[in-house]
Length: 152
Image (cartoon, rainbow, N blue to C red; front, top):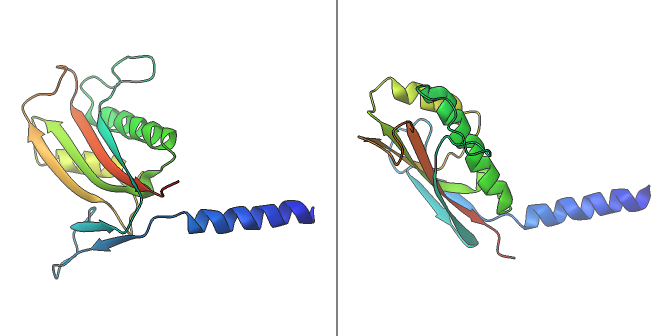
């Protein structure tokens, strides 16, 4: 039992040591809501995650005509990509979100889903762009991300 406790403590110490130092900077007087103006990474390996759309593991489009359902699928796809690379949402430093036929009320839907995945204290630098169309006519949203993880 003592050996397993020692192993857990050693593993926890290594996990803390393996984190990449990142600084989240908001140089303006008013702190933005849901994103950070500047994220600086001191070191690490950079991951570039291609734009994820609302296609599930079986190759089917999820939530046709439903921005919230599509956004949830996109974030689940991002989670899968991050895990596959040994990362998580805390490692994301930049996101770009593309919304088809964007209207101001869409941001509330995207933010509602996003807050269940991203850090509230240190959200990544982010950009939201309204676009006319994406690669498939049923896609309503696409999100790409950049993450930084420890060098191994």
